Image 1 (cartoon, helix red, strand yellow):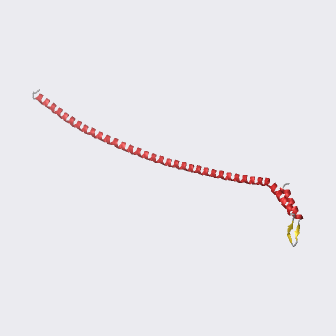
Image 2 (cartoon, one colour; image 1 turned 90 degrees about the horizontal axis):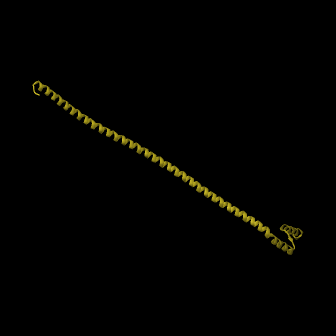
Image 3 (cartoon, rainbow, N blue to C red; image 1 turned 45 degrees about the vertical axis):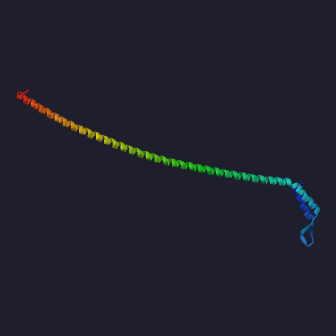
Length: 165
């Protein structure tokens, strides 16, 4: 007999039962028959209850697994987001450092060029001064040599005139 049939028989038992005098909501029933029906319910109930409990357990297990999976997915997404943000921060920092290094290198190159230009200009000035002094010395020597030659020619010419050879 199924649970539904047993419950229907219980209903019939109550419907056929006579009411107590002065209390219409209370009935007199065959206790022995009610006890048999209750025992039948107990004997037939476990299979259906087991199925219901199994379904409830499975639902709870599925919900718990889904909750754990959702938490895991959220945690992984947060970690991934943190990694991306960290990478972006590293890239931004690397770009900043690269720009700083480039600026420093450009400044150092400009300073080096200025120092090299100043050094070359000084060497050229020193060379020019050196050659200027040498040119002056050459002019002085040339002037002395010219004066010596002219004196020597004058002497030769006047000594010939005077008969001195």
